Length: 204
Image 1 (spheres, rainbow, N blue to C red):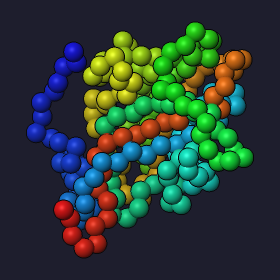
Image 2 (spheres, rainbow, N blue to C red; image 1 turned 120 degrees about the vertical axis):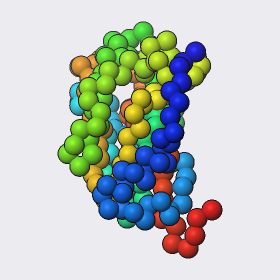
Image 3 (spheres, rainbow, N blue to C red; image 1 turned 30 degrees about the vertical axis):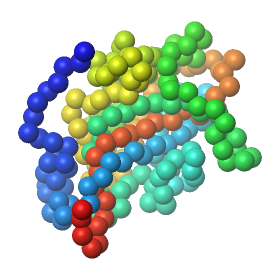
Image 4 (tube, rainbow, N blue to C red; image 1 turned 120 degrees about the horizontal axis):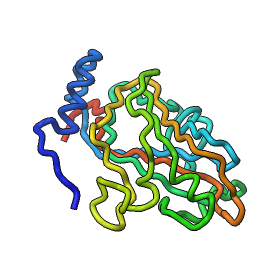
């Protein structure tokens, strides 16, 4: 069973505090919500996956980022609480995902290579997550934040706040890998957490 840290600093409070530092004092009046954003990059031999960079050039179902690209719109903010990876097979002709798998370990060299990746997260050229060993992707047994044996998401020890209009990207670095026998075409990165979205009339 994972431990729990009790604090009065909720993700919402931290979101408001960080935005106040940037002069975005109206964030506290925006609509609170739960949000997940994701991006997909091809398994083409690259060993540095820069998620969300140029995401505006991709479309759903490879990403749910819009034309604003790797930055939030005016009046929006996002507190990242969980990160997880996914594998998909993408059919470019029909623009559909034909197969998906939570990123768990397998027997091939491909999975072994991805079990030793490092994750970095950058907001406006400032690094907020540095060289996080992503061993959590190979199963809950290596994930100190796993709630159960089916939990493959990683809960951050410190909530990461993305203010509006600042570019962000996640870098996933791995060693070379062998795609022999691998039918998946893309790896996806998901960011999940608490968010604030524009509420021009009122909040609920």
